[in-house]
Length: 279
Figure (cartoon, rainbow, N blue to C red):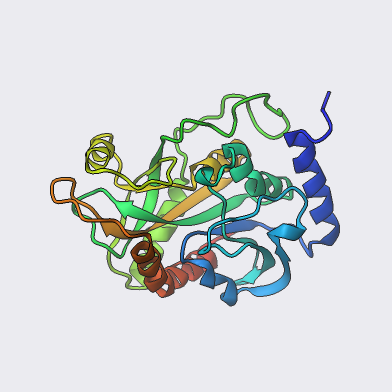
């Protein structure tokens, strides 16, 4: 029996609230990360809701993240845009971080396109590269599926042999080629807790673990999306690449500025990808 105010109850209350006011059930969710919130201006918006007005939604405490849920259309597709995200390092649990994805999956969304800013670990990457995620490492130390499983939301032990949908990866790479966008690569993303940035030894270790880029977000949302049966595509804006043997200071403002400078390319790529999707 559900306890008042438990996680399932909060999700269901939020779903019921949004069902009454959203103009349609979205097919696609686009989650925008650090410095990448401008795509929202390309959306034919039908409803914009600040996170603060949505029951039980967390509130972003990061300045570079706007906090809005936007319902609208892009390339004729019905989409929900999460303009800004939440992070484990803000003090939220991984369940709370992934709360919006859980809610939108229950509102009918079947596909998640997620963006983030990341630091490069692969020495052949260049700053300003776009990495299409092929796999990930969850080094948060927490999983959003921990605890009682709600069987109607997904299986107790979901399969993660293909966390990122192969056809969506192909569409992303084909779209980049069509748009003549250079420095588009693919690789493994690792999520760490933060908020402290990596030491040289940690950078070397993460690289040795098989990661090509590192960040502090996205994996909880991806886990919940796959648990809910959603198809997932992840894009990382690689803001810097650090060599553990010639380590340079990592300045957050520089990361945000680089991600912001990549925004036009990412917007063009995302628009092309969305235009190629079929639902």
